[in-house]
Length: 249
Image (tube, rainbow, N blue to C red):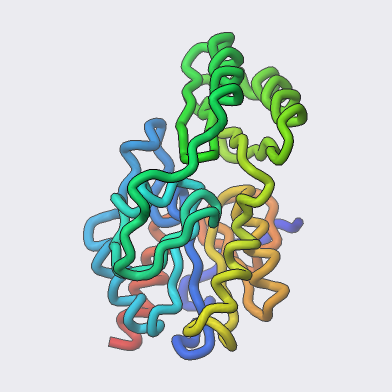
């Protein structure tokens, strides 16, 4: 992975006929918060995404680690939504199933037992995925990582993935790169080149696949990345999106 300097929003061209756009949610379209439940799109964000969806003739996907039911509450229903790192995908205007697959009770209880050792650490249940947030206690990172890595190693079909002040216990099949590849085979996407925009470790899988398929990635914020471009913040992402919409208004 490499570090790239920040790109101007006008230096990242988009062809609305040749590209498909993929966006992470937390940290990409919405700033990270101590409380994941407080994360939301900025004012007029839903309207901008809807216009962008129309401009791209539907080749727009939100691909998030959030459960698809949670993601759908925070984003427009008329665009593609891939939740659980792509485990569940909803087409435009498709409502998610009322209930998804839950994490195994034993894994949940074992994780709860671990986090009782640390102050200000919380679990977010995202279907079959557990996100353990330690943003309010960053000193817990190393021992928490060690304990959760050991736990995941003993659970068949699971892995621990480290992100920004979060550790996710997730099924191996929950992979944004796999989800992006699946979407690119669908009508309306086939023949286009994918652009993946994300801020965290899990987004690098999709950035890698986007690059392999003739597109590229955009990293939001700092950190090493496979992406060709970088935006400094979510504000720059929205400046870029509005510039695309305005250009084709």
